[in-house]
Image (cartoon, rainbow, N blue to C red; front, side, top):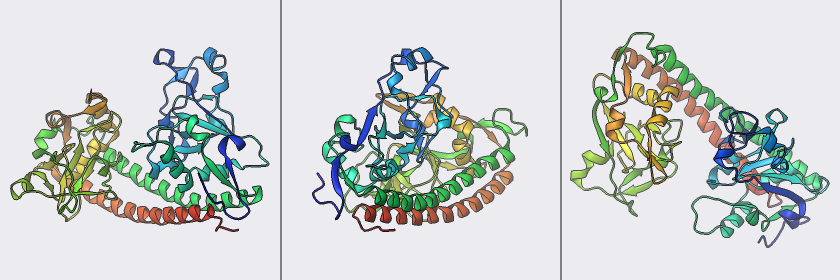
Length: 408
């Protein structure tokens, strides 16, 4: 599919230089609470393997017997191959660490090994998987899908640009250095998120034990209104940015990078436009993502879609407190346990949301919390700007590298 390689580079099919294998379709009745862990798509995040929340195991008998050829080896390159969003695919690629073993592949996860380390460097191939060269080919092989779901039948048709081995190693080393920079920025943002969680617990305590003896009530007690968004479709040339469920991250951030637009009649503006300080709740999504909650903090008119609920607080609550509670570990556990599935999607309606039990600390304490959170958020925005720059630098070098333009 790649018509012209840079000078001195070869074009090869992946099976010519790499062994690759997708995990087996293990059934639920085979799951155990102990034994050998099964790798899942959700365990590959941020370019790392994280098995801390994994509870699914195979029995040792099956893992080392029937599924022995799916056991992952030290040095394997692992990827998720289901539900992949192209812009974030780099987060779903990682090398295994020896400390994570033993570990077994599962369905929708795949591993790669070099057939001959004298021909291809696996770290170089990791970066190839993040290029437009790879994703463009994959998109052509997988038609009619907004997300990438692929398997060995697709991988075997992919072409790779392959320079001499020493050049592969040099390219991988340069990209490693820039990738380390953006990983450092991402880790700083994660620390700010952890600081916000810690501040909530320091000031309000554990919502379960209520150690400070605050008044108890429901979210309804803290609201002046809870309104659904509009079900109208986005329109070309619309006047108002149209916030949808993808505009709220799991961590509770507002993400304005991908916006559609909509027009509203005058009578509908009070119902569907948001204002600074509104809390936005994602009522319908997958079970893992339903309940995403953002805080709208712009002096700009935007509309909300029907999958969102707009919450406006009354004089008993600061919106930062409600937002922080719904994004706290306790809040997310509550939301996960109460959501119900409807045709593959999970849902929490406005009445159920308002009935959630919540502490009601004094408004003065909530306001102090909001001031501190805004300071943390300001610092985090600087870190996010730095991450954007390091991301841009990495992506520029990545694309240049696979055009043969990047030299040591």
